[in-house]
Image (cartoon, rainbow, N blue to C red; front, side, top):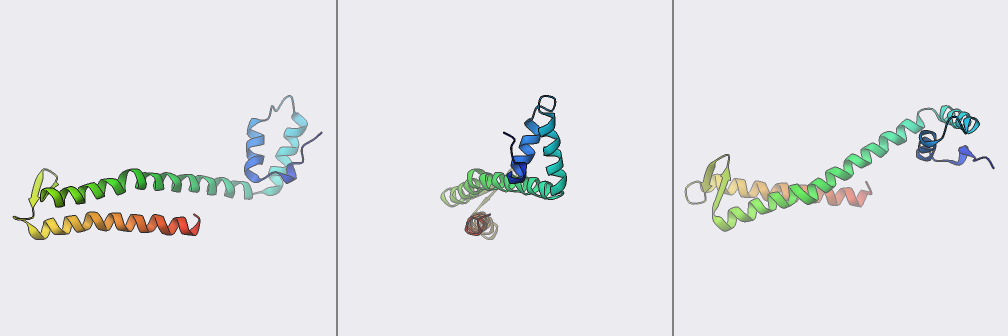
Length: 126
């Protein structure tokens, strides 16, 4: 029984052509090539979209596991200790109240912006 490659999705078609034994199944390989050529740029668009989805997934994971917790910790730590360290300089709320406040607000603003962005992205389904 011969597979009907016209019913394959673009990604399934690409996977099939990459895994087929070209010598043993030369006729199937030829049919796969013809089906790929008939679809033209559709397959490349699907591959590009899959790569974009993969990149977006890693950005989301990075934000959830690293950036958001880091900035949350930095802001909370600054509030608890009363000091903010930036490139070997320590800014305390007593000596530099404005700069200290701006840095703490900046940390929580970054957390808020990333969290809202991730929430909106999840609501869109992308």
